[in-house]
Image (cartoon, rainbow, N blue to C red; front, side, top):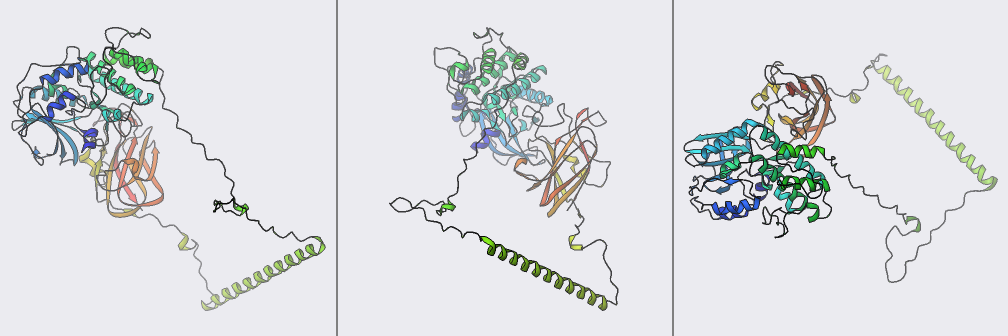
Length: 579
């Protein structure tokens, strides 16, 4: 569970928050926690005063729930991962869509219940894939609960920092993606106010996602008069941490040591050797918002938009070149010396065995005559053998002709054993949408891709970025088909609704309708890239599998229609497999 907690725990996680963690550990068995006002005061010191908690509130009993409890006859609670200050957070299962989700629970009479509901619904309306999505926010039976995505393949930034500072390219990607995401959120009037290392996740595709937008602060009653500046300073602290593996304040936090007391805020490249100069200055511009940095006198960044602009003015940091390992030097074999490459045994020096030289070639007229004689005998033997073989074949054909009444029928198509068999259609028994990131496209219409009706279809959502989905949107979208039993899959014919540049489809052999393994570990059957509305895939060698994943990683830019807006999207009208 420790690994899951760091990879996919909900936004209420307090990892790295030392004072809050200490209070959480003191929760009594009836779910009542002590007041955490003292912890909040310490937290403001750790975070540099980014946000303020509202007026002191009395301790509130956390609802007494247990594993197996169901919400709305749909969400089954599995494991409590946080219990603090009157609310609890759970890992749960959405039994309707058969996927893992996270759930925050608090009493309906909790003083922050209304703000939590409002924040969750505002965050859900944003719909930005760079944030962990809020799926549901409900008040029911004296409870308020917020359901959000659960990302089992993501790693918390806290866990990455425990291994050491990030490379310059990884740090550049983190600050770029987080800044752009927060700039988009602030344009919609949403702030985070608890942007800590535990709130930033890196997925298996290298995409950074932010959890707890607006909700994390609402759960703890945190507010700020300058939300954009607070979030910008938090991004600067994250960049400082990934460059130096140190927290840019005097207090230790999030598993990191703080700066030495009394030295003040010093640039990252003065804390650790080899830090990228441009990223070091960027971190200081985000952190030192009351004045310019001492190195270049650049203006401070006080909003995420200004931070995005500053990043855009930097030279792009490219990933490091892969290390080239030189092949080992050629080792001459010792076979010719008679040692077979084995070290000599015994205390004395090794002695190389003498090799008997081959006999010298035949010389003179006698040798030449012998060579010609041997050659003539070989030629005569080959000629005699060829004549006897031809005579035997003629006799065999003559006998066959007599037995069949001098009539012989020849199959013009050749030997049946050498003719490849045409693939046979494979019936599809069932299908289910595959969404490893927890964001299905059109789960209820999967059956329309094999109902025999080309006017019905399963469609994806529309995205601004494309045609390739990764890394800005997601790893891909797709459907897993069940063939009923393990069969050899060699070809597939797929009809699409939208043409254009371009659609990329790959077939993989999956282990179930809900594969737990990542796509990269599955056996690939075939792949195709098309700009039309029909895709034909053919495997070089048939692959035996019961479950076949149809995985789309690129979609064309298509105009608005009666079902969806303009953007990069695709729809599947018919799928057929053969083998």
